[in-house]
Image (cartoon, rainbow, N blue to C red; front, top):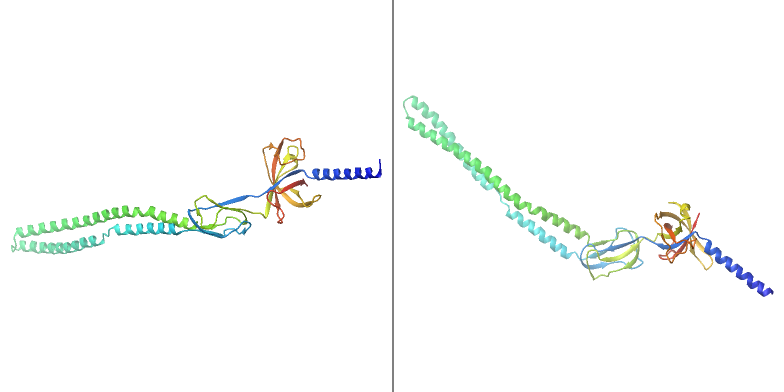
Amino acid sequence: MTIRNLLYAGLISIALAGCNSKNTVSDASGSFEIDEVVVSAEVPGKILSLNLEEGSLLSKDSIIGEIDSLPLELQKAQVQATIAALQQKTLDVKPQVQLLLDQIKVQKAQLDNAIHEKARTERLIKADAATTKQLDDLNNQIDVLQKQISVNEQQIKVQETATGTQNNSVLSESRPLHKSVAIIDDQLKRTNIKNPITGTVLTKYAMAGEITAPGKALYKIGDLSVITLRAYITGTQLAEVKLNQHVTVLVDSTASTYKKYDGIITWISDKAEFTPKTIQTKDERANLVYAIKIHVKNDGNLKIGMYGEVKFN
């Protein structure tokens, strides 16, 4: 064999060794993903503003848009006007009660006078200066006044009871109306589009000026500061991993080198599944694998869908 042939053979052997080392350096492989949140409209209406773009970094609870609240404000004003009209339907029993009390006051004065006259007439009868008919007339007058006072007192109770019942019936209609106002107030708060988590806008689905509806997607956001590698291991490797275990995550840096990241296993599937076509495990003959999730702190270089490999420490 010539020196040239020996040189070619050596280069091929080195290349094959390099490929084998790269293929076998990892114990598992997978792709990066994140937990995504699709933010949807909570009330119907025209989108007045939506201040975000794909790639924007948003903080939690920040107001990033507004939906037209005018229809809800008009609806609230209508309900409040209905509540105010109910107050005008209620009755005030005080004037009627006061009239009856005034009558009772006069009747009691007349009763006191009649009782006084009765006592004076009884003394006159003993002195033969008055007749028994005068005494009978005074007794009848006292009896009539007492009955009139009793009737007026009963009338006051009847008026108060009847008016109270009617007013309660009218005011009972206001309770659901006040609940309606509370519901509208809650919907008015939801016209402000509030961002639920700190993260990066991945996809924008709506624009200012469009008409939206409850449940209609506005944008998708995810936290890219910590990214998840979903990898697959064989059944024989299952005993080697545990939750909160530190592992080394490898990502291609150049054609022949890896960039290393520290990762933590946060989830291990308890069910086996068939090997995904896009994933090659350490044991290529394995048909069933187990999915694991590894959290990796993102330095900005890791992207969704990027391929990664895992080396168990």
